[in-house]
Amino acid sequence: MYKYFLKKFLKGTLCTVLMLFFYLTPTNMATAGIVFQEETLSIDQKISIEDLFTLISNKTSYDFFFNSGLEDLGTVIDLKVENATVNEVLNKA
Image 1 (cartoon, rainbow, N blue to C red):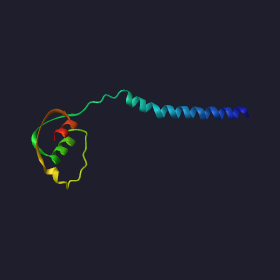
Image 2 (image 1 turned 60 degrees about the horizontal axis):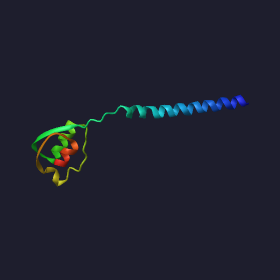
Image 3 (image 1 turned 180 degrees about the vertical axis):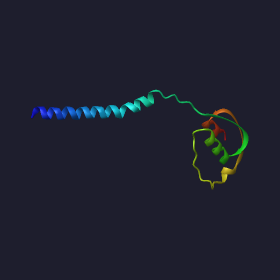
Image 4 (image 1 turned 135 degrees about the horizontal axis):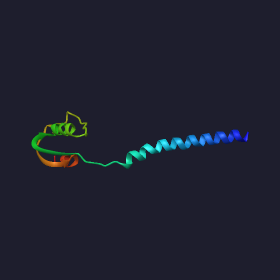
């Protein structure tokens, strides 16, 4: 009887350890080698806010969601930036 419970206990413990290992390992491996590189843009043109969102979406991995009925989207701005991050472009706009 003792051997039966010991065998069940060890099997359960082994399963728990393996589950924790496989659960935690991909997370650690994924975050260990990440090198964050910001995407930059160079823009020198007059452009509407809506077209700017489209341009940024096309040239980077960023996506924008907005209400196309907003009046300010048609506002044209004169934007001149070189090797600027998306955050810098949006702040300049």
